[in-house]
Length: 213
Image 1 (cartoon, rainbow, N blue to C red):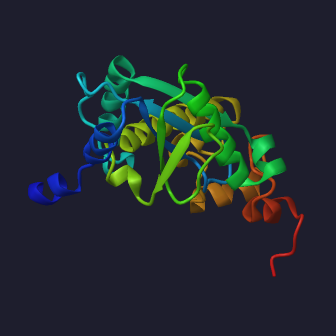
Image 2: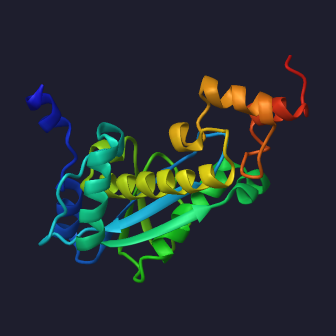
């Protein structure tokens, strides 16, 4: 099991190969929160300092909450980080894909310097103003993207915990806005809150905006 985990851990191979071709900062970009019924989508961009690599980096989905929090602190201390947050009104207005692309571009802009290259998790390039390369399942392969996945996930989870205090009863602190049975029950019981995505079908159903069939 340990051998399997080691083989699946993201590496610096992509960053090192690019740096061998040309100098310049390389940023990893990832997002958290495309699928939930409520709350923002959060993107992060991370430029690692290769001389001071943070500890505990892996795909955020492979870490528990305590491990993510520890890695988040380490990343903040040693790397350059930018965060972009697309709120619910933008998601409903522009759709989730366009809102995600905007959040990714915003995260890169928040780095404070334009990287030479952006490595993006997935198969779509955000409008970042520099060269960008997409990597499917990049958070499991590329260390910079994995770091960005941790920052995005921890940032969004903390935002959802804050929203749970503002809108109690929905369980945001537990399911983080994702479509669990408990969340569906809360929607049917309380209706939609201001941070629910009204462009998403389960929320439309709860509001009676569309017919179940």
